[in-house]
Image (cartoon, rainbow, N blue to C red):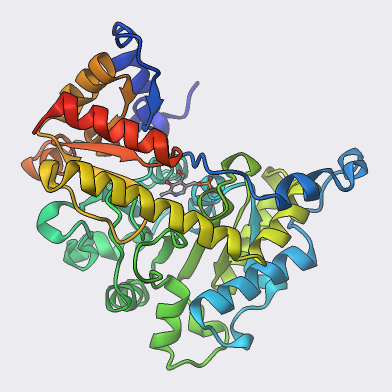
Length: 406
Ligand SMILES: Cc1ncc(COP(=O)(O)O)c(C=O)c1O
């Protein structure tokens, strides 16, 4: 009766976290602080409430299937500004897909690009390990085999896709890459990105560049998939320039608006057009007030700069309190600490019991492939999302330091 492809899905990390912590006694009168979910808590930009309430009569009509022309143009213009892309590279009408958050887009893409068979075999989808869980949900639903490529301290937290066996690459339909990476904050270099695109074209697979943390960075703006494709084509636009490439962007982190559910993907026109077609059959259009708010947010940068400043201040706080304990490093992008605490689950329980801190064991983001590499990639770690306001972050880091010592 049920789809057996879904059997590889275990409990979602936050369900596992609830099972781990909810039976534990509450911490001694301390106000709990939630650092487990990557849900930005910075103030919502003023643009959002104003745009959402401007024309509520739009709610009495079905939304359009793919945002509005102004929304698609705002997304394309932002991409061009952010990655210094030539004007002719993206046709907003054909190459921008409006998404109710990127999670659904990352999930749906697999249904668009994974064929029933590739080179006469079961297709494979490659993803880093640890990884954002939507990738495996997408893979399972598509019927492909999930192949987990380690992203551990040994390889600088960057998956070595070129090192995957040629027999697997030959049946690979899709690769997910997250840069800046959740959870480790690693930023893939332009060189890494161009080599990955070359590999994709050699074996004819699609790359989903998950760039939803692209605007949360420390020193330098992370390079992106479209920029790498441009580097490969010598800066020349034209449809073939984006072959095999799809990038995903979101307002959840950039604009601290995770509840808005607003993102988009862009890239290879063959894929985006098929994607737009499939969304017509099975997905809800983005609510029109959300389309309006999103259009304005993609055209506004000062709130994004303010967000980056806040994250930098929080990393300063974490750095000054944790120093070089727990393998602390300042990630190039994203807003997570990926701390080596020896045993992430034991530390999460101790931090909850004794400090009222909710953190996520690294193992919950890793698929255990039964070898030492996958164990080392997750078990020792704890993911700490620096999403609260400054003073709460300071308080959390002080409690963390006191309870775990180090
Ligand atoms: C790596 C990664 N990709 C995608 C998403 C999805 O973001 P949204 O659906 O809010 O755009 C998240 C959210 O936490 C994420 O961490």
